[in-house]
Image 1: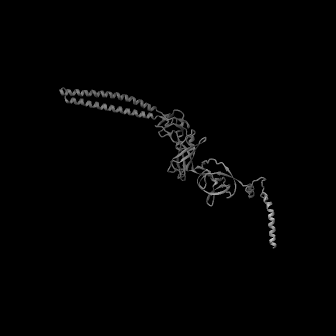
Image 2: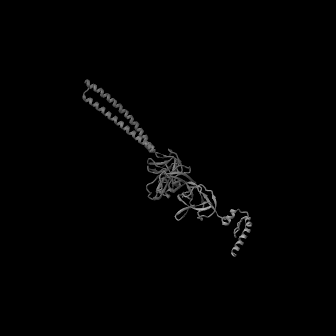
Image 3: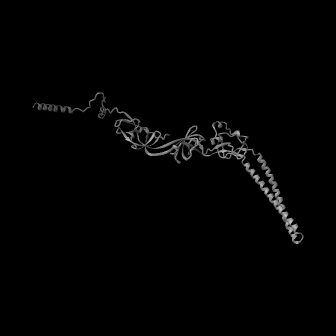
Length: 421
């Protein structure tokens, strides 16, 4: 009975207090150590009570598609498409028409030097005089033959009429044959003299030393690569002036400015990835760096004996006036290319348990997304699966806690540059 009375008393007190409590506006009590703004909204008070109002700001980047390529970087030098070593066409004493030095520009057909031709000119004059004499002799012999032919015809008439015997006629016939032989000999001598003259004239054509092509003068050793550095310092083009030279004497070289090719070297491992037709970005270093497009046009199949490397030739598709032979070049050959996939900085790709993943932000909460990657180029990497354009990526190389609520701060993504590895 006492227990029932106590329950009734408590129920009555609750009914009396209920209207009073229902009239009050609901409020959240401030916990100790938490600062609640005076006019804070209910949501802000809830976040404050949950410890979310002080959440960290995390830089994020919106995923976009781009083009990326894998490249192989090789080095070499600029080589002219056309070059030649100038040599005399005959043996003799050389004399230069004008001083020739390295760096001079010459035009095709320009007279640069010549071989002493005084003896040749003397021969030509002597042969011309001899030809004139031979022609006169030929004319006399031809006239003599005509006279002998008339004599034979007259003597045959005399024999037929009985005024001359056969023995006298035979003598006349023999004189005619001698005249024919002398005429043939005169013609042969004239032909021989004319051949000698033609030979001397052809020799005279070899006297002048002209520029075979237009271009810039270089040392002969620059094109042969057979001379050491000390020899290059002592090599003087004009030192040959007035000296005896032969047909094999290398006077100097000329390199054409019409076009250049990048001649590079690669090891056997890199050669396996290079194919004719691959595009390349070629940087030529002169007094400035000039970047031009190029293409692989030839790959050597045999190693160089000294370097054990393979030569690779790349066509230069655009010329610059600063280009000259021997300049250092770096060629970035495009081995593989991908378009249309997401490309992000490779530092944003993490790894855990042999899986690659990227942290993304969804509803202000960090989530781990497994990805598969492809081409790596410089600081960027291709993401084949796992990300879609528009996904918000955590722009950090640090691994943050999953399901952590954060305040994303979106960064503006710069255009992905294809950086040389």
